[in-house]
Length: 113
Image (cartoon, rainbow, N blue to C red; front, side, top):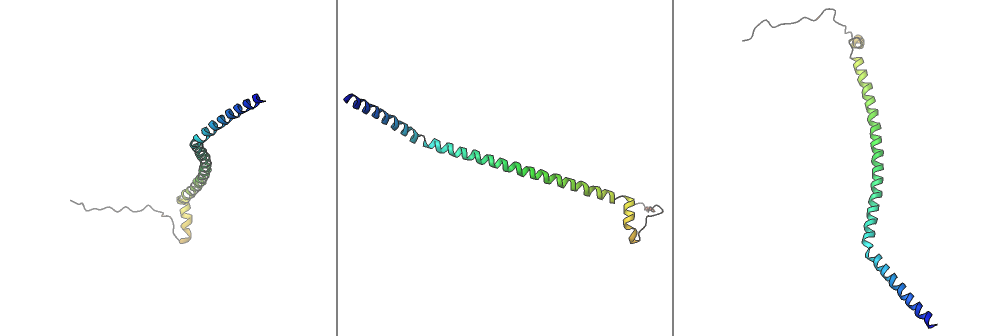
């Protein structure tokens, strides 16, 4: 029986030494664990930020397309209403008419030195 007790005590001492070394190793590497945790947190936050920016850019592109279409429609209307015939129709209720004769050109007959 003494053999078993000696064997058990040596195994338990070896196990305690191993646990003690393992615990020291864990405690020694705590700064690395904190660094890794901070790094993982930044990585996750960066992923969320990137998703948010993609959604924001997509919304901005959609708004830009809508504004571009609106600009084109307004530009088309302005060009259409700027035609001579359309202008004549617009000012007819005011009593204005198109000229039947070309405008007279006034020239300066006095020569300047």
